[in-house]
Length: 499
Picture 1 (cartoon, one colour):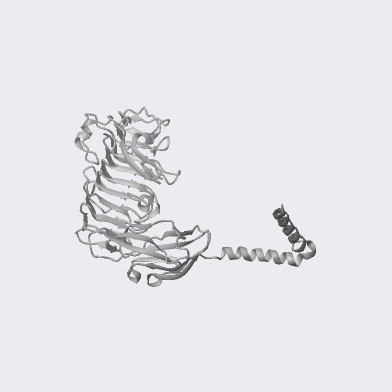
Picture 2 (cartoon, rainbow, N blue to C red):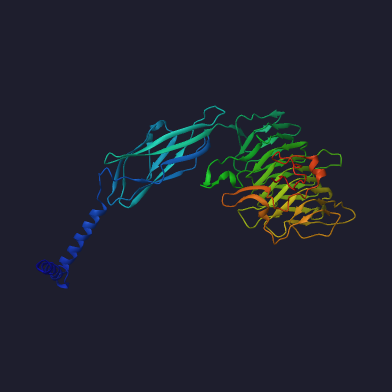
């Protein structure tokens, strides 16, 4: 009882003498003292060895990078979950000034790989920014790099983060024009700046395993001849030069508009692309209009290849002669395939319009035989054992003018088409018309829109299975991955044989 009475007395005394309206000065003084005590708590620091930083990562890992090129910036966060502040006496890279890693702590760059006197207040955090520029090693092999970043607290406690990166040397082609027949080396990737030009009457040959990496807006411009001899195990790759990631699940290499594309001009001839992977460009392949007859050698023959994830049109072919076999053209912002007249054969091709980065995407296939009043006749345009599908209800579109003066010869035979059912038995032979009520993506074995990964081989229950014409399948008996099309006696339409 006495203790409680004493407490009540003290409280009443404080009310009367410090907090009453008649003692305002003393009341404010008391509040100021409380504020100072509070500030003192906020500004208090600990040297207790058990009080440590919490690191957002124990390893900061960079993807494989091009040597002598700066990396993107990665972020490490230092959290202080303790009730008192922590002072960091020193931050240092184990390799010091010799380290290829560059570090900025809370806005302060670590010159010579060392920095001192950083503070992390209680319940607060600071940011560490890390970049790397790897030295060239004049080697065909990928080299691994490692360093350690140490944080020494005022208590003497030492914490560390491991830094890792891998580097590959490249051969730089800057604004180069190929003026004599040349075969590139496949031992290292080529990094192309300011476009690569193949002059008229000159052949550029790309052997199996050759990789061309193009910088922003850079293209391959072919006025002569391009021969790419890829194989299933070692394809010829055309891609952008960003090797880092936009997000943890999304490499820049899986995004479009990383580079230009491949342009075949009217004077170009005899281009052959086998087992090629063309992806991530502003456009895929453009072929200019040429003068030709039925005996003319095709401007372009492309077999067992991929044109994928393009920011514009995948194939834009204007009044030329081409042939595509076992090839996938997929996921383009514009049309996957746009044909303006000419003479074309598509045999066992998969044309799939599932562009994931915009709902405003083009058709899978667009056909036209004129541009304004200028006619561009289809001498022939055959789609044999092909798949043409996509998100939209109708992905096969056209602007066709039919007249006696113009050829308008196109044929779809033993194909799966996502379009309006046609009763034209001359142009649509043994065609499976896909209902818009079905989910087109359900045809395929992998359709991962979160990580942007696709495999356009058909599932066992897909309507693509077993609808191909055996005659054309026997002409090209293996699919893009080397699988025998006739293994089950009923070949599938498209570039891939299901299993």
